[in-house]
Length: 230
Image 1 (cartoon, rainbow, N blue to C red):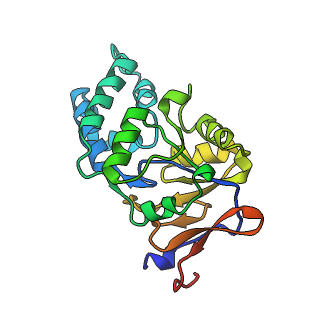
Image 2: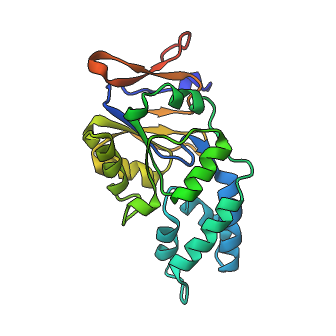
C-alpha cells in the first residue's frame, strides 16, 4: 500500500493542534534505544522486551513502574537524560513535518512531550524544527502519559478546551492520554515497525497533507493537491 493510499483524515476542524514530539514530528528511536538499551542491560533486564515499553512516557515513570530493588528512579532518570542529551545522532524530522508545522499559526499549536525541556530542545534542534511558542514538557506535569494532564495543560496554554483540539500521537500511552483529555486523536505511523490497531484516523507522515484554515478560522487537515482520497 502506498503512503497516500494509507491516509485517513479527520472530517472535523479544530481550534488548535497538540503534537507529541518523539515518533510524531521527529524520529529519535535509534538514539533513545541506544541509551536506554545500555541502561537496561546494566540493570539485567531483557533489553529486547523492555525497549518497546519505554517510548512515549517520562523516564522516571518508566523506571518507577519496573519496581527494581535498590534503584532510585529519579537518579537513574537523570543519568539517562544526560545520555540522551549527549546522543542525538540520527535524530531527524519526519518527512514533511517541518513544512507542516511552519504552516500553522504559532498561537494555534503546541508540543506536549514526555521529554524534559533540555532534551526536547536538543532533539528539536537536531531535527531542524523550530521550537514552538508553547510547549509542555516532563517538568510541567506531576503524572506523565497515559495520564491526560499534559494535553489538558497544553490546551489551557492555547486558551482552548481539549475537546476543541486534535492530538497527534504515535504510541499507546500518548493515544490514551489524548483520549482521556477529551481530544480527538490522529495517529502517526511513520516510525512503527508493526501495524497499530486503532479506531483513530492515521497518516504515515506529513508529506502528503497540509494544514489549512477553514470556516470560522478553525484548523483542518487536507490532502495535498493531486493526492486522491481513499
